[in-house]
Length: 178
Image 1 (cartoon, rainbow, N blue to C red):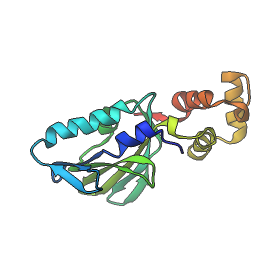
Image 2: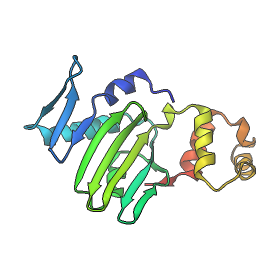
Image 3: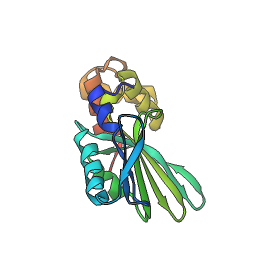
């Protein structure tokens, strides 16, 4: 995964915790500071920062904490942050941050049954091979079925798609929509 430096700079500024109703940010010395007075405004700035990163769409993955265990989220295509928040139900508190290890915007939604953890990544951050692997991992399709589908769409088998064509397949055919 390769996140462009301009995106990475914005991503490192994202941290909001609704339980404290504060927006955290890192200063030049690596200290986390927060602003309680402007938190509602800062939350809007956090969402705007996330939306500003979108060139095409986000790929949403993660898990949902339920009373009877954790369930994996089927990957979705989200055009903006509102697409994600519409998916959240009965969330009491929300925490938004960027996780360098996961290379994703991480949204944690806390509720009475547990914690929902969502990972937002842009397809532009993935390499071509990572996008192809994502398609193979999240679908019940085997390589032969995907080759047949891509042959119909693009006139070439899956293995010969370029990055743009893999994006198109992901957005239109294989990921659920928010």
